[in-house]
Amino acid sequence: MNQDRVLEAFRQEAAALTEAVSGLTPAEWELPTRCTPWNVLDLLGHVCVVIDWLPGMLDAPAPDEPEISAAQYYRPDDRFSPRTNDSRVALAQDRVAGSRDGAAFAQVFAAAWQRADRLCRVQQAGRTVRTRHGDAMVLSEFLLTRVVEVAVHGLDLADALGRKPWLTPAAGDAVTELLLGTEHAAAVDELGWSRTRFLRKATGREPLDGAEAVQVERLGIRRLALG
Image 1 (cartoon, rainbow, N blue to C red):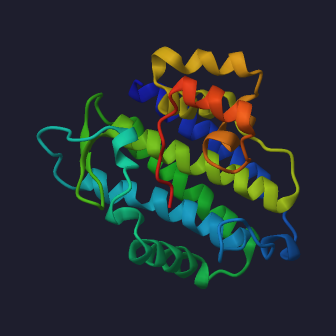
Image 2: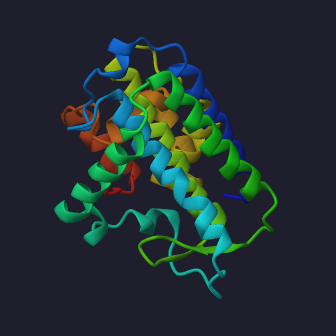
């Protein structure tokens, strides 16, 4: 996926998330999410953390060659171990520790993704970056993993809040292509599912019945370790 397209998907989905959390009540910020032990504020803190990595990555020297793709980034190794997940939980909670005012943190989140967007927008196509896990990636591939984070956790936040999901078409298409491969992404329409329902099913957020499991297996969905 080219850099302009994935960056536009990131921009649209992050803006939709910002709008969705604007105006939440104090009680809504404290609602539990399926991403235990995070509440709504903590989960937004996590999404902010995963975007916060970008400026430092862009400031660092670019690796000579990319080593992995977006799909390979989600391989089930130490990055999704219990120890790393404990660190991930703590980082999110630390990110919001000084701002238990959800409305104020929503503005912090907006500033974080807008800064990342500005910095990425001026990068040349094919720019490489090194992730915090040590992997060398093309920036557009790493950005695709950020779209996954904002989109999938957007579903988690919508469910916690009892809201209709706000998944944008650009992000839904981008994540679907990641899960199925560009050449097979259109096949999801055979299931008669919306992009939102497909992402729920593909990420385990909605159970599959027997027939659906067969259909999903036939589509060859890439299994992503999401922590």
